[in-house]
Image (tube, rainbow, N blue to C red; front, side, top):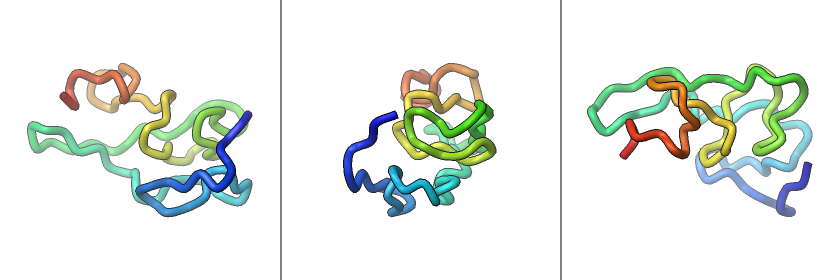
Length: 83
């Protein structure tokens, strides 16, 4: 697991490399262009997310390649519902 030194989340302002960080508190709701909003899908893997370092049960930091769209189930970064 490698993170850029002092890689700060633009949503929550936390250093994602900090082992004390458990979740992105500002990324609990995903808002869509059609004005709908759904709760974010939390990280369910074992151990920390290898992309954004949140603990199991935590909300991913925005831009995490492993975050899943709560609307369609695709990776959120590739989701057509956000286009």
